[in-house]
Amino acid sequence: QTVVTQEPSFSVSPGGTVTLTCGLSSGSVSTYKYCSWYQQTPGQPPRTLIYGTNTRSFGVPDRFSGSILGDKAALTITGAQADDESDYYCMLYMGGGIYVFGTGTKVTVL
Amino acid sequence: QVQLQESGPGLVKPSETLSLNCTVSGGSINNHYWSWIRQPPGKGLEWIGQIYSSGSTTYNPSLKSRVTMSVDTSKNQFSLKLSSVTPADTAVYYCARYGHYCFDSWGQGTLVTVSS
Image (cartoon, rainbow over all chains, first blue to last red; front, side, top):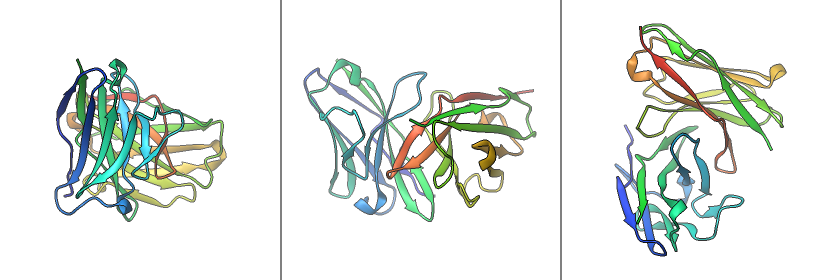
């Protein structure tokens, strides 16, 4: 069974930069996995940040960016703000109409 | 902008079948892919399955034996059935639209508790 791995948690200072990654238990993440990133705060549905590896969803601030770093997908927050404190999930398209979410990363801004 | 709303019982007994509907408003259900996603309390997101407006489906292999999804285009609605539930199926269940290589529209979610 495919597992999509993310760091469990990260702490970042206000104004700082943090890079979250999204990897596969076997194999590498390429653009053909069409990685998307979601931000979730407690009690709310996820909000789409990035799709197609590196395209920001409508209304998402440009401090959020997506990329491929080595064999993983990455989400970078540049100039973190207090309201970026959330859970972040990546999702990969595995082909054949199958999708897998990552394990999630809790980001603390302090 | 399309809106999605989940509906269904909030409490289901173990071994019974969980049934949820998702009503789509502000847009047509036709020519789109629609998914169910769940999140157990305090845990991460899990994709359950997807249905196209034509009725073709794909399911999470780990749940495939228990999941059935259907679509009713006349009602702009799609549905989820999960059989033989256990307390491990307790979760917030979300419906979502897949578009632009992501889930671009989400319902607010509905908590389903499996308990006797």
